[in-house]
Image (cartoon, rainbow, N blue to C red; front, side, top):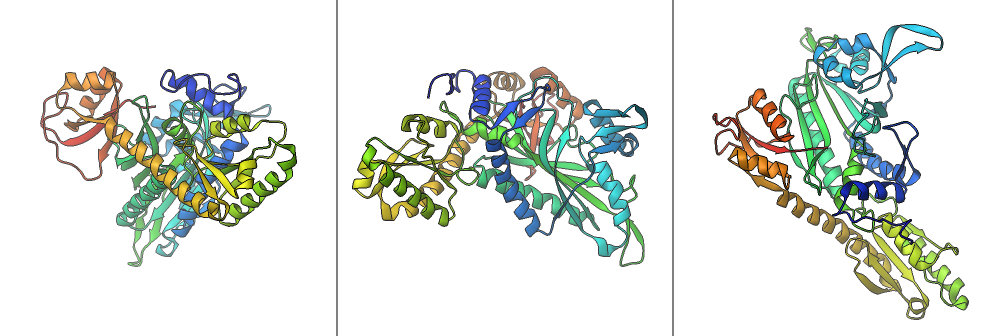
Length: 481
């Protein structure tokens, strides 16, 4: 593969340029003619489908159903929850005309669906028998991200999943929030091999309109955090303005309790940055659109048919065992060119079948994560491929977990805190007084925000990192995307 086709910059030298090249040259996505929008190419869409399939299955196992709600939301709906309206208005795209006619009311292009969903729920919920109402949406949303854009990480339109549920009691709503947080953890850690910190957002960082927000935070190689997903307890903050009420078994009318939660294709951006290397993508097997690529090595013309036949037979055997496999028998490219292309695309395992492999009834297996190579007898290929894919999955998570752990430091003095944030970055564990003003001063001084407050409600071991008042909470600070 020529330098023009392959990655021309090292990840450690220029992460931003490396990332852009990996996204475009691996054919995950391309830039749109419209600033801050992107085109999701088939390979990128197939990666999103793997994510979607896993999460969709888990949600349906927990009795959630998929639905769809309109793209446009009347401005008056957004205004019904004042904090929500104030938080989202700066990011909203507005529709003011229909053809040649001025609209009587501005329509927001969906920045999130809480308002229009809850307006509809107020018609659907009448009795305790209607609860819980568990609905999930797969759609796109638009938010005006015009500056500092990056494919998958920050774009004005993005694909995501957003869930919206209604419950009879606050206890049921809280259980929903934590169940979804666990589903997200399973997706991100166990499928995408991306370790995260779980916890609560501070009040200034929580979802606007929520009673509280839980979050999953990952750390990238440049010392910046990425929010991978959130699950929100909305309390009755939307139920009351939208009149979501039900007649209980006690024959009394009660306001319901609601939740919302979501993940987006931002997870793909984190996956690229975390696992990729100087050759391109490195995809965990459980999430890879293609888990195994088989490349016939055609050096001697007389062996070509037999080699291709063997490659296809291996492909069929692996496919029947549940492995996603492709045979690359294109004649217009050399084996070396193919090796580089599939390494760029991050396929976890390559199988080479050449004249020597044909003669010795074996195949050559090459791992994407370590480049380790081994030969395996034909009758052991399926079992060994399965074993290697699981080992690659474990290895990628272990490497990333070691990196996450190494990124966490602890600070008890503000000057040291600022030095770490401004230098190596990463998560800094520190005591915080719990006051919003102090949090905002830290953000202004360092660019760092509270990424998460531990679920375990750890006890502070010192005074507040900035103001010296008694520590009220343990917080993980970091700069973020």
